[in-house]
Length: 461
Image (spheres, one colour):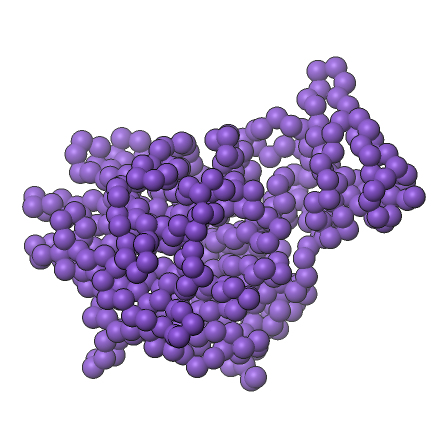
């Protein structure tokens, strides 16, 4: 397939920046917004709404990957005014693409609707009324869809409200899909104009292993400033767990069900906050400089539970870092040419895809998984060069005096978790001979990155 000149230039720059990422492949759309979804069987789909010409309505489209190219677009449905898109799979494996139809202006009746296209074996079905405007429901400014571990699909919506007085505010609401319809049992958080003049943006949804749902919102208040709020959704209720940070950028759940919130602080440093099922929070610094005010920040988790995060660096290069449960890796350049909008997803084989858009969208994927020695971090000591040879028993030093007790994990040569290590003797006699790595770190949770050490061991019979 012949690439346009702009993508040939990007491909050359990409090869120079990193040999770990594929050559960019253009994405077939001319949209103002796009969503990417991995279907069962690792079918990769892109969904978008078109620009409206002088004589046509907006049209929602879908296309799927054919390897190094894309299929011809399929039309999903037409609408008068399109925006606030979301895409995802429900508990039956059906692909949903939702968008907002209509525009509610101050003084007008609420006539907008959330509409959808549903992809089944027979093809797409257009659903014109998932939720119609009226009452408190007016113009949504953001949508999200996620399915929990029990197969229940949830929707999140950020609504824009207009009061008779002319004042406006946003609220975060949640709903549950039942067949082809959605019920909306309540609000995650309500915004208001008095007395706090509070605006709520979100929610971002992520599944919990107990069939509930994580919900993350950004809240702007005249009294408290900007904060990130984490709720747990169960049934018809939303329970507040934590408030922290500054600007919400993204949120994902890992394979253990923990929530990873990506946010920036008041100094525009990039952070992750990992919320465990016991509600404890662990904070990790990703980057000490976020020069483009959150431009291009996106996160995803892969099939082994690694968390990936991408953002635009100081020079405009799109970089990526990954986390296996400790510190974040040193940023790896992916593509240059200025800050892009980015979307990251992963398939069942662990391949991580990154889609970058700035007028023209293109996609790349990482061609191999990072190894332990591929992830130096300024906050993590280098891997010891001299390997320790062990047979049968691996010893992890115990703390002495007032030192904090250390824990560890044994990783294989590809960085995959093999077993948890405890202070003292650990039986490794059942493991295959070969090269492994021991990563140890203090067990205490800290807001700042903890000191982590990595050493190489060779296990023999």
